[in-house]
Image 1: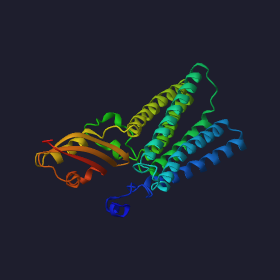
Image 2 (image 1 turned 90 degrees about the vertical axis):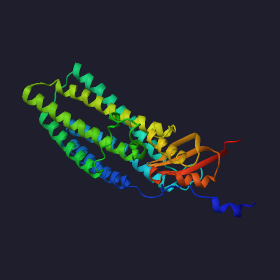
Image 3 (image 1 turned 180 degrees about the vertical axis):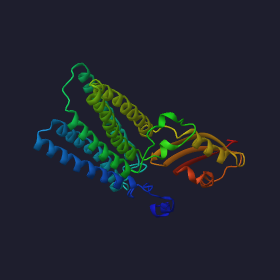
Image 4 (image 1 turned 45 degrees about the horizontal axis):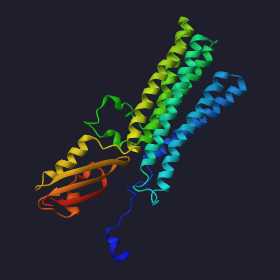
Length: 311
């Protein structure tokens, strides 16, 4: 048998990863908005000598850099989709970028907490009017960015059980990470406005560092959730139980089939690979068992091993 006779059984492993994802365009728009605000705040801060504006402008710069990770991941995924060095395509680049962003979010939370604790014990003079203006501007920019990202609000997976849903496997974790960065900034602005108003009108200056600690805790919680979901994909965790059960039921409900070994894992946003071993009294070709697997599960690459039960 030569190479020409096997071409019928050959296939690529791109699985649609060469297409532009909606999240790529959205993230680019958010980077443009954030970068513009960064330039305005830094220029204004330098012109009028405002440290508050300058500090927030530099923070916007770090935020834009973090979002750039998502954009780079989208571009790399598309351009290298056909690279044969990737066994199952470049789908996991999405999860890797999400995990990297989750780590940055965790570091951001630690910095927030550290600075807040320091200011709690070593208070500094606050220019309330100037700081409130900066916080409101930041909130407006982040609100616009959240709208551009499409209200991607699947950040709170802690309240769901993997036994009951498939959501974390179908999510665009890269887009989710970008959304969480924007959400973290918006939360910081909201808490800052609340604390600054309390300090200005009620004299509760200690509210500023306390709200910083509260914000750090929430951001850390989101980052850990994203880290958990993306690390599961990177480490080839089994697919959610309902997907395994549906696959097993679809094959074992026909004839006298029995699945002795089953592995399904995510290889990209909403797509999976599967390997299974079928034991039967009347075995059929592997293609037959592949055809029994429900199409809506998103399993795009399947390897079936078949054994006769008498053997």
